[in-house]
Amino acid sequence: QVHLVESGGGLVQAGGSLRLSCAASGDTICISTMGWFRQAPGKERDFIAAITWSTGYTYYADSVKGRFTISRDSARNTVYLQMNSLKPEDTAVYYCAASSLGYTGTYPTAYNYWGQGTQVTVSS
Image (cartoon, rainbow, N blue to C red; front, side, top):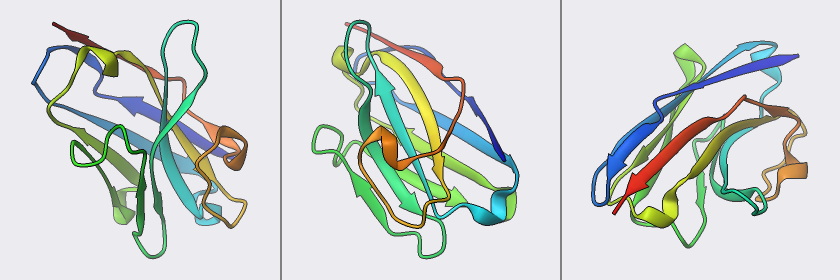
């Protein structure tokens, strides 16, 4: 089992920045990929970014490319999402996810562990 705890959400003005953190604990040795998703009210949970744990290779949704950066600290079992140039449409609950399935996917079913979510609100 892997336990994920997110932090760093909050309220920010458009154009501002936030950094989300996700600390993993438990059976972290089994993690192959970690990712971030977001879900706005009434919408589906959308992929934002992912990073492969062993190589650090990154993947991004087109909507955040160039604005968001995913990174990891393997020693701390923590993944980060640096969000710059935030827009009101970035407002959502942001979820950290981890996969022990051995492949990297951009859809929720590719991940078998989830955090509780953290709210990000961008005001115009």
